[in-house]
Structures are given as structure tokens and as C-alpha cells.
Length: 325
Image (cartoon, rainbow, N blue to C red; front, side, top):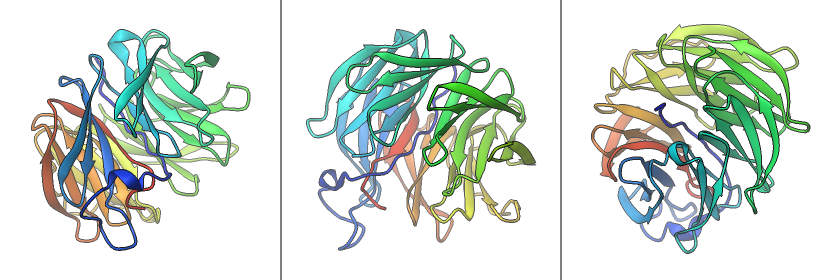
């Protein structure tokens, strides 16, 4: 089974950060963490470094994404051909939808009305009605589509096709494939720069990061070695720094987005880190599958602040909207 991916959204969810806020003006960052073997989502307070709630799920959850208004999290279950919808106010699963063959990557559109899902076995990107789970569109992409990310301003989605070694660009207005961009081997996780000018792609098997210049004719402009088996990638809110979690080496690669230089210091994330997300201007978080932990990262000092125990085999996480931003 392929591994989980990163999805990141923004919007309000301050009520869940009940105590120990980051400051008087901003709530403490919260992340939702999906643990595959435990079949659950944990809500983790990053500053307090504690679990606030645990929500039970169907078996083998993989990808997850938060709605822009911060009320809902959607989770994929590839082995069951399911997507679960979690209501964060009640902290319960409010609905499950049958989706495709092996739904894996997931993202929520900015209006909250549509959900996009990559189908690993059907080699497709599927659009769902967020309220009913009904399929409203589909487009063929490459083989074994994994991570996906949406550029709302451009009206585009980017899909990493792990077994085709490229990224598919999809126009969302009519769910049409408009471009394909070659990458390194086994592209998996994606992250966009804040303005959407660049797409960063973590290539698992070649151990490198593809830098794609987006626009009318998207193209790869650089490919740099970052470590052994990079499974997660994220960009800081100012767009200046790219973070890559390397599963096999267990380290965090820090890349200067302007020079594309790799920092010499590589903090150790853990034994088997996978997904990574920026959760505030000063904090990031990653999951360590082998140690069942969320790793909290100080972006200013570029050090590890602490670790939080979660359910068995955490694969993926998402920053919850409206907390820490």
C-alpha cells in the first residue's frame, strides 16, 4: 500500500484550542493526525504538545483534508473505497461515502462544496459533492496518483503520479487534463508556494525535490537531492523556505526557496517520518510512523521542540484552519 500524503487548508477553528494558546491574539495551532493501524484521527495542540481529542474511524485511513471553514475533516480509506466526513464540533464521523476503487489523496475546494480525491487504482482524479459524496466529475491522470494540491486562484489541481514519474495539471472548471510535467522517480507529496508560482514535488525513489515553475507552460526548473526517501514537503507562509521530511534517513531537509541551497543542519525527525505541515509562521509538525509521534519543529531556530504520542502508525496530518495563523 502506498503511503499517506499531506493536505493543508486555512479557515477558522479557534474553539478547539481551548487552553494554553500561543499568544493573547492567536489560538494555539492544532493539527489533525491520521493513524492507520489505530484507525483514528487525533486533534493535537502543538504549543501545549498534547492530544485534545481522538476520533475513531473505519479501517486503514490514509489521506485527510480540512474544509476551509474549519468545521469538517475528510479522510480517505483506500482499502475500503471510502471517504469519511468528520464533524469537528461533535468530534464524530457524520457520513461515509463510497468513492472509486482506491481513494487516496484528498483536497477540499475553497468554497467547501467540492472535494477532490485521487484514485490510486483507477488512475483518476475524482470530484465529489461535499454534502452528498456523489461523484460530479472525473479525469484520467497518471499511474498511482498520490498527493494532490489545489491552486484556487489559477483554477488548477496538481496530482503526483507515483508510478508514472510525472505530475498532471488539471483545469478544475471542466475537469480537463491540460499539462504533464516530468519529475524524479516516484513523485508523492506536493506543496505550492504561497503565490502559486512554484510547485515542489517530493520524489521518493530518486531522493530529490522537483521544483516546477507553474503558469501557462509549466516546467521543471530544478531538481535537487534532499535525502533518502522524501515523503513529505511543505512551504513556509512567506514562501522562503521549503521543508522536506526524509523517511529513510529520518531527517528534515531545509531548502532556501530563492537559492535552492540545502541547509547543512538537518534536525532528526525520528525513525520513520512521513508527512509534514507548516502550522503557523513559527511552527511545523511532522509524523513519525515508527515511534507513533507528532514531532513539533521550531521554524525560527530550526530545532525540534518536542514530541506528542498519538495512535499507532501516524501517516498524515493537516493544519486545522483558524488555529495558529
